[in-house]
Image (cartoon, rainbow, N blue to C red; front, side, top):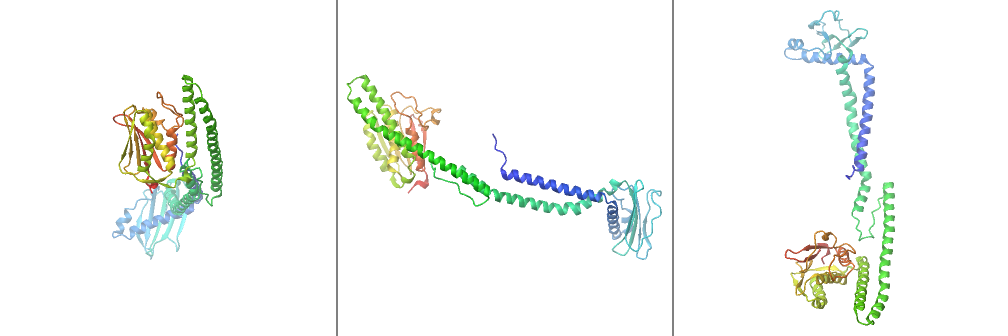
Length: 444
């Protein structure tokens, strides 16, 4: 399922829609007012045409320019007369149809406009005093909507759209900016939630000062994390206590099994007790791995660690008919918990011994750098099982191999708290390869 648009985008889109709607209502309202004032539109039309006449009159060939003037847009016919300051005719344009207009009235000492709305089509007259002290008197006829349409739009553009649009855009930008600022704490909290690490249950979200709603949400999240941490601690404590309490009865059971007479039943019981003991020890290791954060303070030399573990595991390998080869390629020192890391490496070597054929060597490679590799010569693992190797309580079906399927899960948990990763792969010439790699931040 594709994620929906962000809250900032949704609010911004709604603000834009609201601003556009309000602006349209305002424009329609103003235009409706203009539409009801035809005399004002008529005066604007006369003024605009007088400006055209003056531009033509100011050109180099005034007579030719005045003759070339087209009627106003939407007009059926028009006529005009230009007089100088002494009221002498400079230019006169006759209407296309003489029946449209009577003789144009002479200009007075002031500008005027007269609209004959009872006629069909409408007729308007007007006179304007030009900047060079000359006068122009005109008459225009046409249907109402085509005649006044251009003036109507010009008035709307000049007095409505141009003043309103910049303010609307500015308000929208301010609104989007304010919304982003107000929701910034929510975005920051979401990023912190995404960065939460299950292995760092003590981490809490930063509580913003404002807004109050986001603060309340973050506080609720932190309270939920408190309850979750408490539940996890209770579960870990129960697991550790249960495993610890089971050690004593298992030790007694082991002693009683050893006291039995030799035979198949004794051997089967011994294997069952060993498997249960191994499971209990792994449960204790798992519980300890979940509480390692405050104990990762030692400087651990990987070469020394690998040598000590190999020496301890060598008798186990020899008993199985295998050998362990330690290869030092230039290791490094890391910050960690030496005992926990030794358990990880011992577990990997123990798995390699279990899956390796007799008379074959197990390679333990240190380096280069902060890196450990354990490689066996066994059958390896299938591609399907590669995704399951580190899952708790998952076991591959292998003859003669007992276990609860916790070893690799424990190793991964311990290494994650050390800032390291563990990966598994098949070697080109056969066998499994487990690689532990530390990040730069884990180096001493």
